[in-house]
Amino acid sequence: MKLAAAAYPPEALPDWAAYENKLTDWVARAADAGADLLVFPEYGAMELSSLDGPDAAGDLEASILATARHLPDADALHDRLARRFGVHILAASAPVFDTGPRPVNRARFFGPEGPLGHQDKQVMTRFEREKWDVVSGGPLQLFDTPLGRIGILICYDAEFPLLGRALIEAGAEILLVPSCTDSVAGYTRVRVGAMARALEGQCVVVHAPTVGAAPWSPSIDDNRGAAAIYGPPDLGFPETGVLAEGGFDAPGWVMAEIDRATIARVRTEGRVLNHAHWPESAARPPVLRRDILP
Image (cartoon, rainbow, N blue to C red; front, top):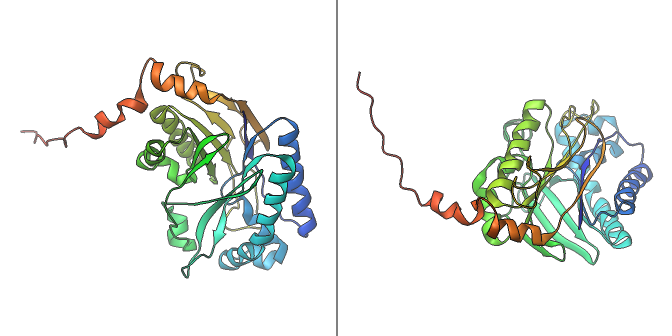
């Protein structure tokens, strides 16, 4: 199969037609290149807030409400495109008002036969907690698809190994990591986390960031990163663990072909067996403190 990670530039769009044309073009280009699974980034859907004008897009709370208002139409569009092009699409995440008074950060997943479900972010960043009041959502999900068993770790979630391990123990072979980071340091943290999850789980990780400046939005005004696809640096994978990587802050698709059998093989025949040996590390007794004498 061919995986595609988007380095996606959010834009202020004049109307719905502009959004529909942009998304359709992005999906068409990936599908025409043979992609089977398309991953869009965290909070890329915030460009929907621009459809309500600059005042809405330029206010933290109003932009949440505007994006949430347009999300049902955006989801319907993703559904149509996934069916039309015969692809799986992880839509750019967005704030969604579910059952509580505050929104969750949700990525919705679509397949050629229809919607597959969604994944909510588990651990909120300081900005989400302290400035935006976006809250943690529902539990981790495993998606059993014709492409393989897929899990999703939204941005900051990829920096926590136990979340990735929970998905791996549930059977995940591919992890999708949509991200939105406003600095090189932020991007690097997610990149390191994504590569570590590929190493620990002996799996493939698809990292899709937002890129470019969006001065019209106080929530995603600066976006830094590079799209990439990672695997374990072992049998059947590149020695660097990097299957494909785009230019830094360069919009576009980054793609790589993978075979599920390669994942299964490295987990049983690799020079190291991180996937199988993880329980040994988790079973270690707690470290005993030894006070240092003066």
